[in-house]
Image (cartoon, rainbow, N blue to C red; front, side, top):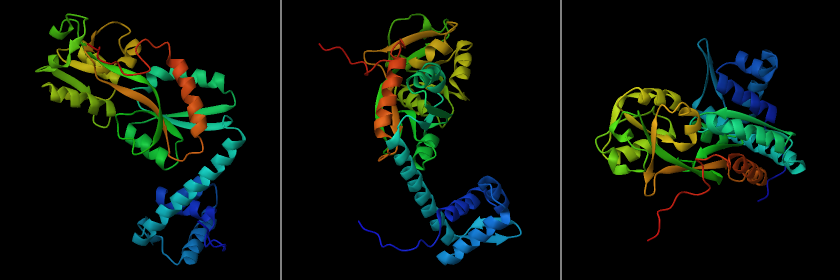
Length: 318
């Protein structure tokens, strides 16, 4: 595809100003964020509106809001700025893919349990690469990756990744956890999912992909969810260890969350549920080759984790 050579109606700097005003809801805040004087930013925004022939913002004493027509302009401006960022990113990483900054997201049910090993391993392997981690739930990470605010993220493949490319890191099985005195905690032998029938379960709050996976299993097998919902696995463990409920935990979390052996933990059989951890990124990203290398470092760092395996467990053949 060829594009006509003509002078752009607006500059990239003007597009940055438009998006900043839309995001921050005012010219003053946008000027501070862009490190420019407010009169200069306001003048450039007005000039951009005149050049485009579209009133992007509605101004009143109550503040500034994006007009109906302006919403489409702001959306396209984000895409142009995102493409510009990827162009700069491509050039930089073609020069040296492991010099600069990687911005990676990680979900809360994974981050605390692998970052103590993964972060130092990446630093040792790539001393000129700065990795900035951001913990967030899956929808937030996916959105930030797609809009270019994150380069990639460590997620569960079973969640909705909305078409992101990915490479697998390992299989994280789920286990049944209860207080030692609970009827389901009287043994450490593998347990069938059918044992959940009628059990009272505690789970994470809405928004966690692990909650969705755990509840889908519990509901199918007749478990009853309690009213309380935890905001973290640490809180969930404390509630279960002192009560009469059970829960499902990712095995990856056990060395931290069950370090005091306050829970009775049982694996599921014959082929238990679990999740596939992946490193995901935008389709078409210039960092594809670099992500493959980073994934290898992460796998190596996690190789000694007793609960994480390269592939899902398979039922024995007969």
